[in-house]
Image: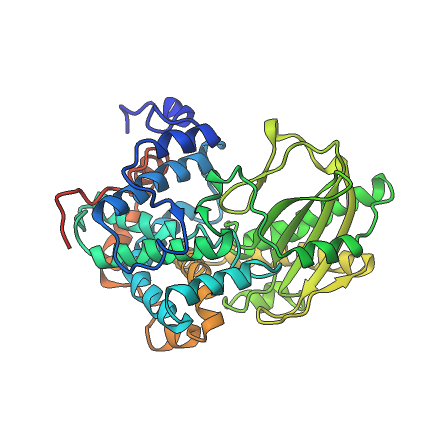
Length: 437
């Protein structure tokens, strides 16, 4: 760590590959295969070559760096031991998820069924199988790298599981985005994934932002629900996702943003969320003065030089969805928006009190619960497997190797492992081309 120039590493990946589209093309030129692009044909095979696996790992390392290098830190919290629970969760995902990926694929009807599952869910708003979930299985691959870094695994081990993890993700990517690059970093950061009928509906039902006071309320509503969801998910972005920008005929653009507020997967939800809806969806229209919108692989909106886009907001409509499996999306009026914003603020206060009363171990394990359930439930619930995963597959029980890694990862080593893992790609260690199946 002491010999690594992290400032340089934040400028170019491994000192070579830049940010953005140039970086995408640069890292792509080093690969031996076209594995990071998906087609109807190449997502079908159940077995990849070792060269393809290593190429996918190589691109994933750059992609994670690209996502994080725009910020100088992944973030720290004085309340929640985030780095510790993230690393434990990544390891748990690597040890448990590949088998469950295979079960989900089988239940969905094979490769084609999994692609269609992703397409049908991601093309509608207020669904957690969205553009962010096209990326999150990267965390499973990071768990493998962390175990190797701890000396608890070797690069050539568990090839079947590695193959399952990569092909599961590629099939989800293909369903969400269609043919082409499986990562939004290779699609100009424009995840336009919703069916046109939704965009047409949001345009037809648009509500004008009449004055500065109304615009200020829109910003505050967005902030209140986002902060509540962020803390509800233990300092993660799992509760938010944005897609777009969708270009409209008059030259304006639309962003569609979901904030998930009442996720029944967690024991603290009733106390914190009360009678909040499962999700609120914001259909936001901006005029031609808005800066260029870019959205990264975890559904986060960013603009050049962090330009403020709220001043360009012209229309702001909010919808509610009451259950994860509901098909109803209902537009709500300004009074209900105020009520939801107020309940979200009160929920933040209740969450802080509850989390502050937890032991450090309980906070870590609550974070692990979020980071494992959020990464798999959106795929397992639609095919009817979630309850069996929890009850029969003992989803929440730590794998013995995760338990072995727990103490090294929570006694300070996580702070040493994550910077090189995230910034230098050391979480994506190649198998090595001498390995065989």
